[in-house]
Length: 310
Image 1: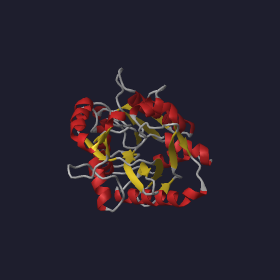
Image 2: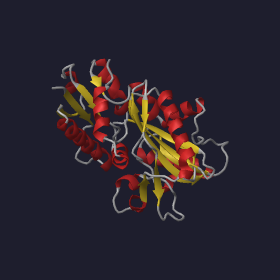
Image 3: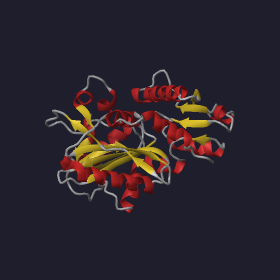
Image 4: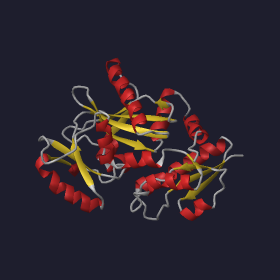
């Protein structure tokens, strides 16, 4: 019986909701694999524990960034490779390139893939969105992050003190928001149908998916943003373009495993890549499987059956 180690973050007693969710997903994946006949063990990350693993195991890598552990998300694959352990998900190089959002945007631009312009003093006037450079799960993102050009530098400094890490600003694209989930090997990517995040009854509120909108119940964003999985015929060309751009992202970032691309689409139907998230949460994959009647469990099995081999 193949043994699969579900590797996740250490979960402190005061862990925020996005970190607690890592453990929930680890337990979820373990249940699926156990039902499919695998021997599964949940393992909080530690180097000493990894050094004791048999080389025959497959490590299902769910280690993500957490407070004071921002480097772990991209370093863990390198550690697993150095220990000659097979593992799921993206490699060190792919995670490094995608985890640093400024570096990722420059790579996208080099390959003529559309992404919102980075702020500089010479940038055109208008609204800019301030984000932490290396955080995911919308950590640090709130309504105060959306500012006019002349306030960017002051708010940048405030936000960096608040979140304790470097931040950057990019041009705000006012429009629709889409997500594309994908998985596969370096040779072939499986691109799942794009879905849209709908901002219901937002009025004059800033249409951004904040940390609270993702994680905090009874907040305005949490209750007013919904996912839409089916689309009108008028969106067919746009959806095809999102799939094509996502395929290009898979190749540019040399991905193997699973990933997600987040888009904004402006009022002229032009898509912009907000970010590429390697090793994202599995909720998008799961809901797409329910909507389009394919097996989410088969995706999990695919990842275990196509690990990185050092």
